[in-house]
Structures are given as C-alpha cells and as structure tokens.
Length: 458
Image (cartoon, rainbow, N blue to C red):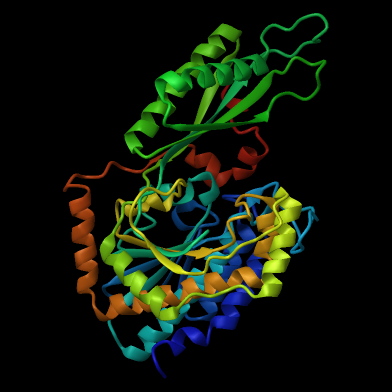
C-alpha cells in the first residue's frame, strides 16, 4: 500500500462523520454528543481515549503509538448560538439552540480522520512515534484550548496540526489577532417603572456601552471592542435588577488587548457606581494570536500542493449563490480555488489555538468557501450541511496526514520548528495561559449559556 492510500481508505468515513457532527450542533463547552461521536470513532480505530480531559466533560485526549515524536492533531466540534438551519439554500431553522456557522463539524471530522490515517501508517511502517488527538471544546468563545493548556491537556506534545474554514485554500504561517473577553453582570433593584426607576441594572449596561464607545477613538482607536447584551431585563414595566454585558477585545498586540480589556473593566465599574448598581466580572480568557512557524508552514504548503486544490461544480456554485442571495442579497457566489501560502500581514480573526502556538509549534491549513458566504451566519450552517463544503475539509485532512507522516519520518523537522518557536519569542518564557471561570465553564456551562452564571456573586 502506498503511503497516501492510508488516508484514502478513510475518505468516506471522514465525510460521514462531518455530516454526523453537523446534525448534532451543540453550544461551546456543552458538546456532549459531538465529543462522544469522535471518542467512539477513535476507540473503534484502536486509540486509547481519555474522556473528560482536565476535568472538562467534553474534552478528550486519544492516543496511539509510543515514544517521540508526539504529534498532536486538534479536533474542534462546537457550534454557535442561534445559528440553526437545515442544509437548504434558504432560512429554515431546525429548532436547535446551536448551528455549525463556522464549520467546526468539518474540523472535528477532517482532523480526527487524518489522525486515524496516521495511526494506520504508524502501525504499518513500524516507525517510533505517537499520534494524539486533542478534543478541544469551546473554541467559539476562545476558551477551551487556553484552559486545556493551563490544565496540562497538551503536555508532552511536540507539534500541533489543524485546519479551519476561510476564504482561501491555504497553508498558514501568519499571525492572527490576540483577544481577551469576559462578561459583566450588573445587579440592581426591581420595581414598578411607573413609580421608581433608580438602581436600574440596565442603566449600568447602557452607560458602560456609551462610555466605552465614546472613549474608543481617543484611547484605543486601532483595537476592536465588540459587545453583546445577553440580558437587559424582562418587561418594560419592571426595572431590571439584572443585566449582563459581554465584551470581546481584539488587537494585533496581546499586551494591548489585555490593557484595553482591563481599561474597559475600569470603565464598567465606574459606570456601575454612577448608576447606583453593583457589578461583578466573569473573566473568560485571553489568547495570543498565532505565532508563525515557517518550518511547519513550508511542509504543509508542500503537502497541500501535492494534494492539489478542489473546485466547486457549476451546480454547487448555483446552490451556494442562491444561499448567499437569501442571506445577504448578493447572489453571485464566486470560488477562487487556487492554493496560496499566507505568510505576510495579519489575519483579522482570533482563535484559541493561537495561544497554543506560543507554547508548541503549530501548523494550520485553510479551505475555501465563497467570499460572499458570511461566516457566523445561519447560511454558513446551511452550507456546512451540504456535500460541497466537505471537499475542502477533505483536502486539508489529506494534507495534514501527509504532514504528520513526514514529521514521523523526519523528526529533525520538529526540532527545527521548536528552535524557530523559541527564536520568535526571543528566548523569553511565555506567560501562563490567561483564563478564569473554570468551575463554571467546566462543570456548569449551562448556567453560563442561560445567563445566570454571575448572579450568585452579586
């Protein structure tokens, strides 16, 4: 059997698992069915699976082989709140709380399948080495991998490989934005709004938003500061006694993102005093952007070219165009399948494996969907259920397998990648991963998602 046949024999299983994950979208940190689908698949393929990794019920670590190098492959599988939709080119919610609006079902299936092919190759070749799948919950809230790092879930791994949807088929050795995020809960006193409106928790939220937005242009004009109000009261004739405000900060600099998050917290606490209400903070996590690694990036670029790009058919583009028209009004889905190597500039997104890349050399591939199809949208959930979008994930899965096999055959490349990582951080020790609220997120994520997680602290 040629080396690449080890992956090819799993192609259909990978595609089937992607669709199975798509059918079971779950909120971040609550991916019970999704993680079990992958755990059972890995166990059936001969991996030793540790469930509830680091005390996180939907995290896992699956291992095959022994000795070094230890190649880690990341699996993601969380969905997004409010983005449920059927796999049709129009709005048709399925009644589920979550939807795969960022195609993490594809990551879970593609990366796990690549690892299974690596297992077969290890078994056949007799080479020393270990392949490890780390099942990582909660990427969409930029939390899971940061907490897993801090709790030891990535210990002993020499390199990490992954992929993600994007608007280009690409190997990536490019920084992303750093991010900090957390939620603030304001507590007031409920009353009849016709008679009394003091101690209104929503006043604290609204004043905080106005103050942060007013100060942005002068204090942090180049930093992205986004927010949502998850709880602003129940009825207009009841003064809200609880209101919550969730901020996410992004910047090219980790230290700047951290500083702005702390500044926003100070503004929020001052606004609470002015409004005459209490406030508590629920810090979630902070992540570095990707630390580029050309050693791994060059290897992934080579293997991506060996696999070659995939293309949408005319019929598939027609269906995606109809989907785009119904989602945004733009009905011309254009595919650009050419391969590229992203090394310059900065990616405008943030991902929690960015933090991992500062501790362990990490390589990433992207697969393309049409630029007219917005990520984090019900339409992307619909596309995620279509066969056409699996093509790119399968392309990345095969290239990840080839990269892992190359690293097993040439472990000196991992030594070179680690030396590059150390050089890029200038030999400095990286600060421990920044995360909080672990008891809630690991043990009681349901109270986070129903918005009550901070009320007991007021």
